[in-house]
Image 1 (spheres, rainbow, N blue to C red):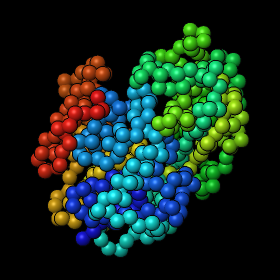
Image 2 (cartoon, rainbow, N blue to C red; image 1 turned 90 degrees about the vertical axis):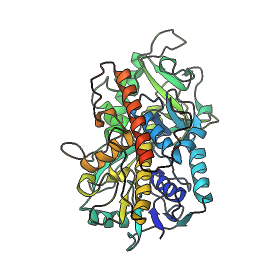
Image 3 (cartoon, one colour; image 1 turned 60 degrees about the vertical axis):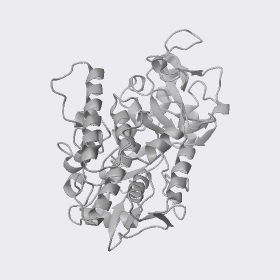
Image 4 (cartoon, rainbow, N blue to C red; image 1 turned 90 degrees about the horizontal axis):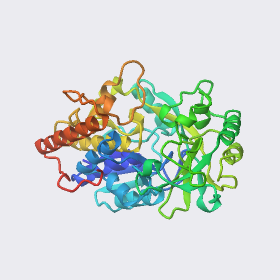
Length: 448
């Protein structure tokens, strides 16, 4: 019996790969290129929308630990990311076109994955299904999922602009990473003095925003992790200077001093011809983006290959309907994966797809379903989906706060996080051995 995976984003591709690599047959249904959401542009699978960064890479970070756990569990996406990486200091960032193309090629080349290009407007009435249609699920299918799951929650997400390298004023920008991380020059920096920042700030908070077209635009919920820069700025004149524009760890080589504020640009592709504005998710009108962001030193004549956009994201009230195995409680043949479950972030979404795919296959084979230990980042995120926190359920990314504490308490944060990672990988190895999970743990870790 084959398994249907609906949606070829990061979660859907990871789910399909896990099923196929373990001997299952998969029908992967993706509506592109027949139909696109407002945020998607590429016909390839695993398209990255908001950013090309997959967050921190070091092992003593929650994001780095998650990626290493996934790699050891046989992830498709982590090796693809490592092979298509671009310089980004301590983060793992990728050339998004090469990354998506590599994932697409591997999916199409797998003999057990059968790709179908069509919009799915209804949940299949029979068979085991993994729904990984993402937070921009098309209206008809979203309505059916909402009816099945007792409604959905909604928030708004935003993407940052991308500019060409050749359009930058190279006399004003300088290459450097904060505190010399990575190669020491992984980012381009646009330094601002106090007067330049004050002018930029005033224009930003008064700039005209693009209209939203959803039914709840009067009071849209904006997710903190992708807060539009103009909304963040409204919290106070110094909010950006202590956030995405913080100048700490940087010195302007022209002056020898730390700037008042710094806008950082991160490579979009391996060739270094495109850069995105780090932390500049926005919903400003396109003309306003060009005008206001043109006030940033070095970007006066920037050519935008993509303007920032804001779009609706929908996620389930997962603790009410899903188990930590990502199985729907009321209809056990159905599994969910990706950001619609309430995990936030590219790799977090992919990790849910990894578990949903494995468990969907185990369900077909009438085996007990599995969740990694809560002491692993993968397992802790899965339990967040099942139990949530106190109060309203909200999207959550990898963080050490959802894991059981280390006893006795370690006061030094770096040492404490390293202990979290060591415990997680030891417990993951035991879990995989006990359950016959194919392991890549013998390989040297690329994420330290």
